[in-house]
Length: 95
View 1: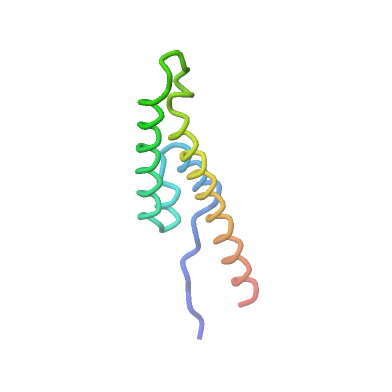
View 2 (view 1 turned 90 degrees about the vertical axis):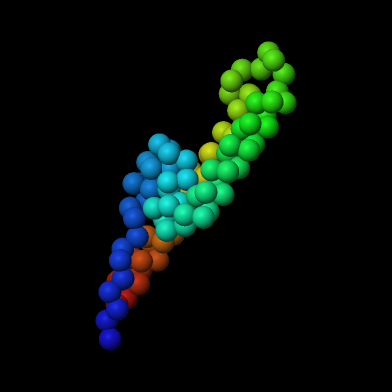
């Protein structure tokens, strides 16, 4: 019996989407709740560091918490897409 599975999204396309719009990489990886959680924490920590940073800190410093979570969301989306694509390619070769 041959089960046809839909191929996962291209990891580079997922990376591009994650860079352009936070959380969209997770949505492309079929993890929409995870994407919403990342988006929530980007806004939460970005807002927190914006409120607590000293007035003379640069905008990057004021948004450091949100930018950190944003970078982690990009990494997470790309890593998940790479693993899913590698597993899909390996199972396709053995079938």
